Length: 380
Image 1: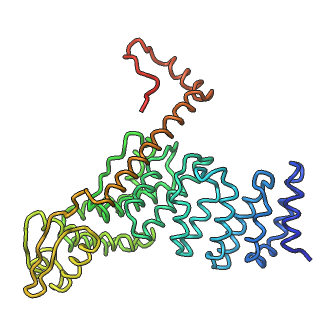
Image 2 (image 1 turned 90 degrees about the vertical axis):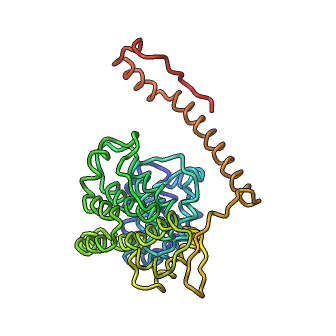
Image 3 (image 1 turned 120 degrees about the vertical axis):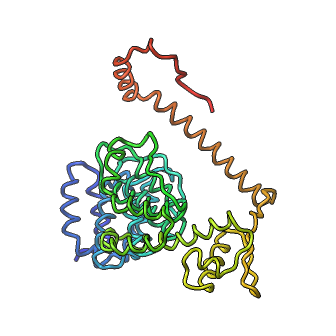
């Protein structure tokens, strides 16, 4: 009769020699039923496995994830997977191949806060590009679930602009969500990508996202009726992409944008006038939108309940409170730390033989006498 204890012992014993790896794989394949039945006990035994010695620990973790998904109980894999990540990581700056697996479990289990525990780490070391794509994609979705759209945009932007020799499905799906979240958070979307974006992405992303580009054009008209008609016409497409919920938030955000435009024109306005202007059904619905926007800090206003008048105010922030000073100081410290990290990485790359070899080959293609001299290193 096999047991979890015997499984761990076999992993430890068969991991010492490269010749035993095949035998270990066969043993683990035969132990699938045990992994499934004893999945809840695996967490307590993970501490006995050293990733640097027991090379199949990642395979075990991925198989374990597959089993909890088959059981439709992703929440059972969240804790053990996080423990495995912390054991495998050389530091919190290291992105492991288990990061995407963990974030996927968090998404399926809707344990968004658990996912934040790794998303808050600054990542500088990446082994496989696919891990980075999936980490940013799943991470963006977790921040969307938390309504933290600015952070979601940051991660989705990383997917879209990351180096790639050919277009991939992860980048396409990230680009669709990037469009929707941009409309929700900023009320606009720019199709112009940064110059460092790969040519593959520059050429193909728009072609794979035509319904979403047309949604942007409809959104820019500011006419809620036209937007709702377009969404209804293309409902099946958005639903098949699992983006219908985000599209509905885009429609809702148009009301907010139209109300924000009123603050640039009027100092006071009645709730009924707001409802008429932004095409809401009643003054009560307008009041609910205005109150929510005030609560979210999207506008500054007061509502007189007696006469139903809204008074728009200026931003009260004077940037001189203790909290604001601490926030600014924290931002400065973070920028200084990032600057030092970039300088160190630049020096490391400048000494890398592979980089120097490639740079030497590229240099031969040009006559550098035709160019102004460029400093090789900048001190920030």
